[in-house]
Length: 432
Image (cartoon, rainbow, N blue to C red; front, side):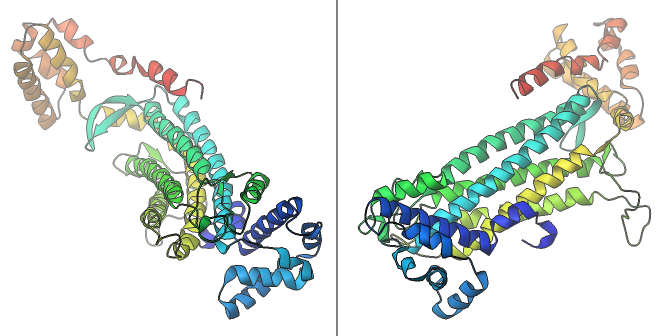
């Protein structure tokens, strides 16, 4: 991922130095286990640990010649640690190191993403509670439907990201496995107890059965979860973009005093952060299909997945980390305009009370079909003439003959649409 969209903490997880450091941890943990089982001489791991140095440049130089990353790494360690390093990697295969490391990196990245989601949840909840009863129009198909509140709108996103948090927790658990099973996964040259020791040392679970690689359905779930989270980010970003349109302007991204919106038009204040989030979501989701296709490897192992994971591992986690933090800041600093929401709510002159009138007519004897036709006729006239829907209803004798004027007026009450809001909030935020 390019620097523009990289944050230091998660980026460092994917840097060569951290990757090789994890490789060394795996090799030393395996050596410790072998010492305890009298497979290699006592003290090997301690001696190697004291002398070994991670020299990224040297490893890459060796790899350029031998065309094998793990061999290059082991050669570099041996150059510093001396003859004791010959006991490293005993009975192991490259995938034992590569797959265990990759899973640990995904776990480390996942923990950062969980923190990001928690921060986003806090930002959304704060605004949702603040605007619990801030009236605005609900839209279906982009068209005015019935009144809701802005807090309720945000609460839907809060629930969605709670689900995303649960998905991510489950996916981290799924990916947190260790495999030290040797060539084709038979443990012919390495004792299963070594795998258990390494897993415990790295705080991973033992992979119950590996071919020679850890099964990629685990990774497919992890990256699919990242894709789902990205889609949730985009849903909220698109909502902000729609609501910031000039003719709507119910919310607006924070715009700094020295910020400029357009190189040509000085008046512009564009929702660039939300647009950027939409783009990042597309990028993150692009990792899902390759991750799914990685599941189908040849026999006990091939490396068709390798190049894919070297890219999507860092790129998707780094991009998602950046996107979650950016979205949290957007929500935290969002300019919200209740007066404009109310103004927009009233531009249709009350025709959104049509269902209320429809239901009342059916309760006094009208068939649903007849009531619908009657209400629709008056609503369309009010919309076309830009006149009051209530006045059209009150002037319709077919309606007033059945329902008293005072009762009709009471149907046009915003409180009717907000009376259950508190119930929704209570059940949505219960124990959260």
